[in-house]
Image 1 (cartoon, helix red, strand yellow):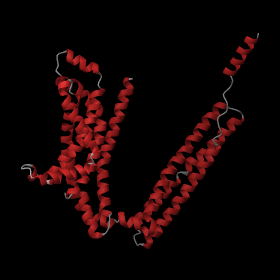
Image 2 (cartoon, rainbow, N blue to C red):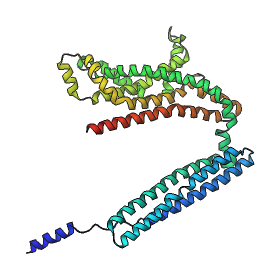
Image 3 (cartoon, rainbow, N blue to C red):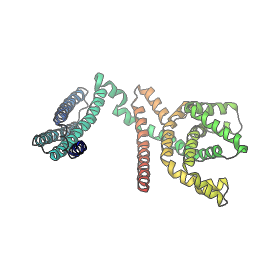
Image 4 (tube, rainbow, N blue to C red):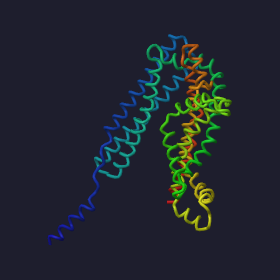
Length: 371
């Protein structure tokens, strides 16, 4: 009899109606308050910016229209905030009946609208803080880093010099692809006879991954020339800088190659060797083609770093974009030309970064589909 009562109690608990969801009204009120404060702060900042520009006689109709449009777009934050409050009221009314299903549906919708408001409000607040930093201290930051006349006057000088960075980056990338693969294969050579080669390849990777790129460039570009080697002393500084960057990033890329090769299941190698292929033939026809597809995203990430580090060649006197901007900045006592260089690097890097993201997403979809 007692057992039957226990079973009935367990059955009742199993089929008991689910509890009511948490009331989303406090979160909705918070979202409405944050949205309202954000909109008010935006319009205050717009008024402050217009006053600052008027004081410095840089106010134009186009800028006024842009600021007003930004304020109007920001005011749209009130829509999800109001939707969050009204939906939260519906959820509370459904919970009072009680209608659990409706309360859960409306509560989830209310929380979604709340997070819309809070997320976009955070983005707007970050933009406002950046604008406040630019106009702080009587627009000192804006005049130092974002002086439009200086940016326009230095643009073509900096752009011409920027092609040196692009040239060094492209040539070094090609060399790094080949040299990194050579080092990776050297680290993976089988057998005791290849142990010294494996040791040297590992030592090279450890040394040049630990050595800062700027030191490598300085030592190679100046040291080899000072040594008076017959061939090296006649090379231009750009060629020596390419060689130094190849040494540095070859160590990183070699490890990427090695990780990709080792990620291929050993059965692939065993099957190829059982068919009579040599070790190098197995790498060439079986392992490396599969490994390369897997390591494209990290390879491109290393190349993005290489592209940025081409700015380090200015340490040996190459007139690249950064060095050209420093010359302009020292003549005009303004860093807006350096900001122009930064923008050029960012514009050159962003397409590569998005391409990497696309490759990673495609690989993820393929992996999930295969699973």
